Amino acid sequence: GAVVSQHPSWVICKSGTSVKIECRSLDFQATTMFWYRQFPKQSLMLMATSNEGSKATYEQGVEKDKFLINHASLTLSTLTVTSAHPEDSSFYICSAAGTSGPNEQFFGPGTRLTVL
Amino acid sequence: KQEVTQIPAALSVPEGENLVLNCSFTDSAIYNLQWFRQDPGKGLTSLLLIQSSQREQTSGRLNASLDKSSGRSTLYIAASQPGDSATYLCAVRRDALIFGKGTTLSVSS
Image (cartoon, rainbow over all chains, first blue to last red):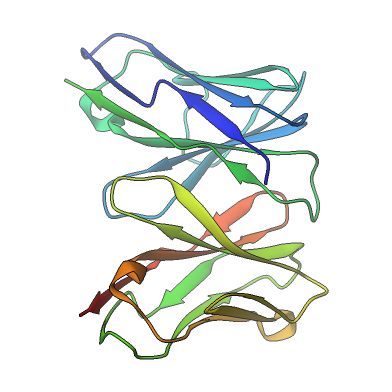
């Protein structure tokens, strides 16, 4: 399967600061990228879907001004958590697909964010 | 809105047992269904992907079936081993993969 990387794998930051997480598709062009969030002992919740060169589509309840998503190229998407607070502490996982439809989504290893 | 339900939420079995994990979804207009494994604190490992036109997929001791019309899938694990202990997630895709809450499996030796 295709390889998706995330950086950093874990990050600790102070409340009020912003954190950027990168998601890269290493061996294929990802026209669509997805960002998920997973709280402890919970399942993955879709936060937003982004298509290369377009604005991201956010799921209901996800603040677009707080979670800034950029998908400027076919191999890179970034999620910036702005003015992070302790309740934003979570496991953030990105996923990439070559296109919509029956194509498989490939997942990154996740980024654990802890906000103090 | 698509909803994915997994039953049971948790399961404990002795080593060697065959077991079935269940997944149901409310909207049958899907492109594919995927089963994942997640170990504590780790990312996802894809186990099986079933396209909407398929009925089942097999990989080693794992067999997944899909009945799209009834909105159901099952993951069958044969001859369970302690190393199978993990959380198993079912997800269906149309626009994006939507996940169930998972079944946490514990296999004792």
